[in-house]
Length: 338
Image (cartoon, rainbow, N blue to C red; front, side):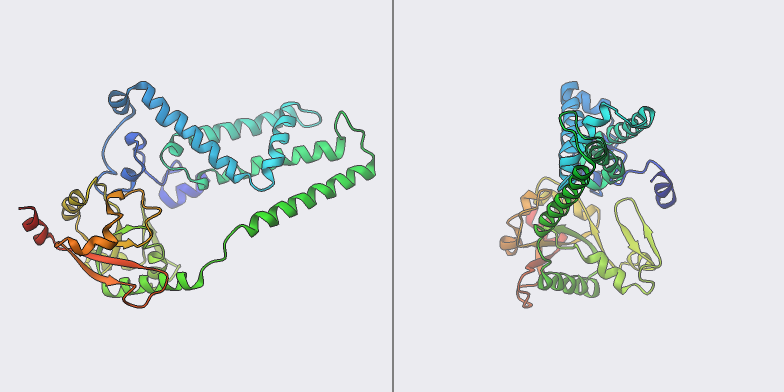
């Protein structure tokens, strides 16, 4: 993992949000206007107290990490890992030094990302712990099947039956868990792709995403790139495909951006400074936690004279993916303010 991060980002300790952990707000780590603010742990303690610091970057991070780890153990590791932990602490036939090394690596690995989890709770940050967790789960199986338990005396036939039973339980739990995953909505995905193609072909400049409207924009840009997946540049917060980075430099490409603000008026003021041109907003706002002041914009956007509706998927005949794109007129905004 360290080598992969070094090859891709030039830093083996690269973290995909930012190095400025202690600003304390996950959105500010992604926002173009706040991501470079210098704010240290001592600054946070000065503004919020030591107790607030421990609660935000200790307890919150540990709680988010434990919750994500618990979810990652479903469906069957949630059963096997606790027993594996118990048996690993009471070593029977395993090498003690080997078990200690597993625990040291696992604890150091998890402990090093408590602070990142206080910012963004993402399972991808702990996928590398899977091998250690699987080793612990197999210890439980080995202990039961090979040696039995202190209260039971298994014959060879009973041990085989036990192993087959464990495998059957794993298959049943995995199958049941997989059935809970919804079938992809083909029409919705097709409309998302069509929307992204329209944006890519007809618009250029910076666009703000409200309500997960631009999920497939990068996919569309990759599809339109002459090099497809063969050549692309990876950045800290996003990536631009192949030669299209030069297109954006000349103003001929649409680029997704994130800006931090606490009201619509403040967003427009910040947007003017950072060349924001469009706001794309989904009718469904259930996941809009970064822009709570924009939740009514889909229905009430026409009430703002400085916002022009330049695209409405519902009027274009889209059935499920209902999005409006508003272009910002900064001259009208200034007149409206005065």
